[in-house]
Image (cartoon, rainbow, N blue to C red):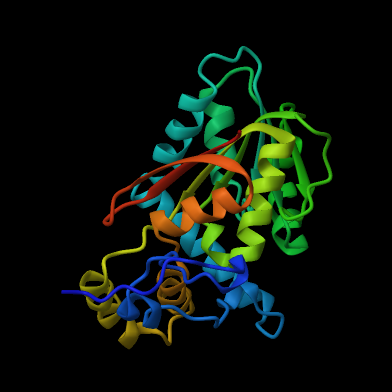
Length: 251
């Protein structure tokens, strides 16, 4: 029988990635080590290679299409929706949304100026219904309720708990609701097996960041705790072999 730790978290910054009720084993399966994408000492060419690999994998496994379907589901009843994508990286999700919704307006953003410049140099930079901006998701430069939906796809695990709670608060301030799509946190035995597969490949930057992403992913319990800390109603659905989806709304 798995032993679970006390569920009370006095400071959200101290919350384990597995949530307040995480087992001792789950608490061992996390790290504060940043991914290459988050490190200032890593060459920009390496970071661009990782972002390109993420884009290719997303295309190969139709992640961009499936994530766009989740976005379109949330704005289905809005005639001319205004969408804010945070942490966009390569911009593929926003591109798919623009392709599939004829009247959607998308602000596609990232905190990394290199990524913003790269997206602006693509078709997104010239699209009449797209705006490419550098935005810090923890302090969004936008008016309250300016957007119908804020989206954060496959990057939420990069955030420390206090940052993550702040992003949820900011996303639901500037938009009616926020959609977070991210990696699932596997049950500990499956998580160990996954890490054993990735560990021999850490010489490859993409696999290196994949391993750290897995260790930094949040459990449904953690996501609910983050939402509660931000004063939000949070619905979480998860598939340990695919994605987890969070809908956050103001109470």
